[in-house]
Image 1 (cartoon, helix red, strand yellow):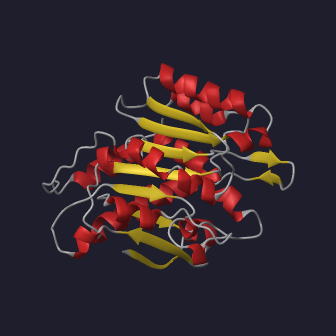
Image 2 (tube, rainbow, N blue to C red):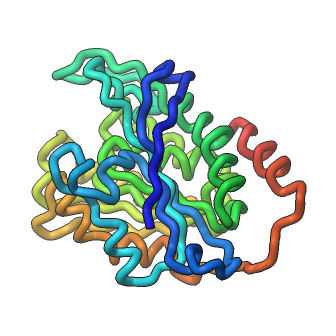
Length: 277
């Protein structure tokens, strides 16, 4: 089941509404009392329904989760559709220059602060989540893939695993790789990265950037999986085909702890999330 409703993010787009989507497994509706890991995703409008997707094709996450009976909650928020580069600004942690759009003011940290300090607590309060770091993941594609990398590196006390599909690592001259080299990372951090064979030529030096980032993560003892997808392209249909690969990485040897968390878990988590690297 996918529930969705309108929300606002005043810090970023004033009172402009956008949709929040939450997928819950069938066992939730059956009243099992079970608690679930949570996967946070970017571009929520492209995740579940073709008729909501920007280009008429979604990732097919609902069908995949139902068919595989994956016991996980997915929370995904629609991107900023402002023609004034709203999505690029919100999904970039860094200010950068784009040959087509000019200077893009990076607001990714503002977005992640909202997600960690406002949206995540709301999800944890209203759904039977496993709210700890071990059971909190993040995923996205393109600029959302860049944000997924940023989230798991910069907010490693909140997210333990990330999937970055076709991540825009070309943004801001490799700053995400510098973050990967310096961030405080726990040893159980898991990162999945892929890139389509046919999109490697979209940006100069992409092969080097992906391989260099992977090398840095390996040297940091991160459990990283990197794939170049034969025939892969920069589109939702290609990303949908990667669902079994990145979901297997996110759930590999995942421990599900059924008992309730102590009352002070949220205070401890938020305190950790606010620490600067």
